[in-house]
Length: 394
Image 1: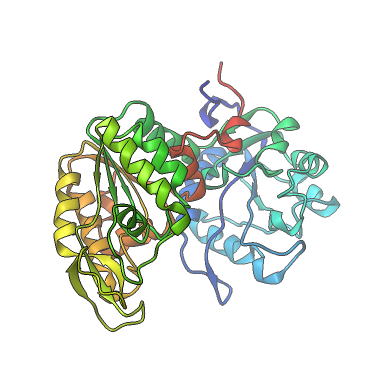
Image 2: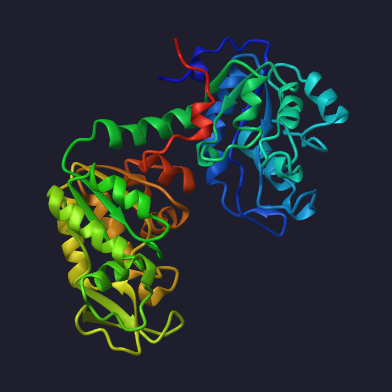
């Protein structure tokens, strides 16, 4: 069923609880990457311009069961103040009498940022009593935290039992529309490009996508488990022995369904990730004492050719240890190939976003998802608690 959206809410004069994903990197008390903050600004402006006030909530990091100054949202409040060009006071807590009084006192056009939700263990336990306390701070609920939508936490799921209506924010809508376009009505050929270290992280995704895509391209560390399943010697390259049969089954499923599954034909090998450089060898020539750390130039050309023929591309995971300059070429070349394709492209995951930024092509990607885990679970076809909890549109 389609979900209620923020545009369908009567907002004037209301206090709106906006659950955002403000889980950004900090260094020395300063936000070092405000991408996620900028992503929620349009929803906040929409609410404020409609004559409402915002009670803004988020988690930050993984505090261990209680308040920890290291995980305070104070630096986030300061950065939001600059981005919104208006005061963003930080409440002393996310619940309690003082916070409730601050929320009650909000006037139209004002914002209150709650302190880190995870300072309370009840948040991650989806505790009903804690959710009820959060719900008492506002008149309606907007979820704009797609990146956390796969978590059944109190501010995402249980709160909607006590605070209605519950609507999707502008960012949540964009995420669902872009990902839905891939799974429900993609222009074909649909190509999925998967990388990253482990097959185990993406087993369900590979199995699900084989039934959806026209071509599957696999690079990164996970490719070596597939190459091992085909009988190749892979030296000291990353492999998951317990997933070799899974990889073999995926290869057979792709063959049976007529899905083109493309693996590396050459890789860049070295003694280890801290090596000063590497050399490209064919996959039958990987030395026993070395490991593959990037795709090679012939593989890059092969992957680019598949991407060039696509009309829709979804990409998650780098092609190698791209954080290390000697092993970045494959990932950056693939990023450029995705950008140059005529396809509608969607990427997700922190490493993948970092790669397109490093390649300087972020502005040529069709849609960049702010999510990691939720992005993968949605593509796996799983229902997300944060989406399921929203009110159904009439």
